[in-house]
Length: 230
Image (tube, rainbow, N blue to C red; front, side, top):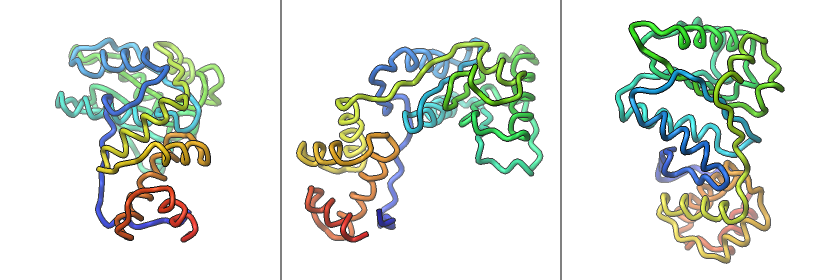
C-alpha cells in the first residue's frame, strides 16, 4: 500500500478507555486496579499474545495512568539501542518491558537488573514490573533468571478479538479521527483485509489521509481508488 503523508497530524492516545477488551476483561480489570492507584503490590505482571492484539497499547495505557499520578516509570523494549549504557533509576515506581521475547543479551541483563531493584524495595518503595511478550513465560528463549521472574507473578493471555470487537475498534478509531465510516465500508474492510489491530488502524489512518488529500468522502470507492493509486 502506498505510504501517504498525513496533511494533518492526528495523535490518538493509547488509554485503558480506548482499549477494546473483548474476551480480555480480566486483564483490563487487573491493570486498572494496579495502574490507577499509587500504592500497589510489587508482584510482577506478564501479558502474552500474538502480534497486534494490543500488548503495546496496554503498556502505553499504563504509562498514561502513571503520568496522571505523577509517578515516573522506566521503559525497556527490544528496539532500544543496546550499545548505550543504561542505569536503573531509583525514582521509577513502575518498570514497563515490551517485546521481551526479542530481547538481546544486553536488554536481558538490564531487564534482570531492573527486576532485582524492583523486588528489593528501597525507602519503602514497592515497584511494579509489567512485561509483554509473544509467548507464555515457559516458552521464552531468555536467560533462566529473567524468564523465571517474568513468570513468577500474574500471567495473562491476551486473546485476539472477534469480528464484532474488530468492528468496535474500527468505529472507535474512526470516531477519534473524526471520520464517518458506514457499515458497508466496515464489511468491505473486514472481509478483505487483515483483522489484526495494527493493520486495521493503519488502513483507517491512510484512508483518512487520502480522503483529506482528495477532498472526498470515506467510502468503498475511495478505498479502492487509494489501493489502485499504489
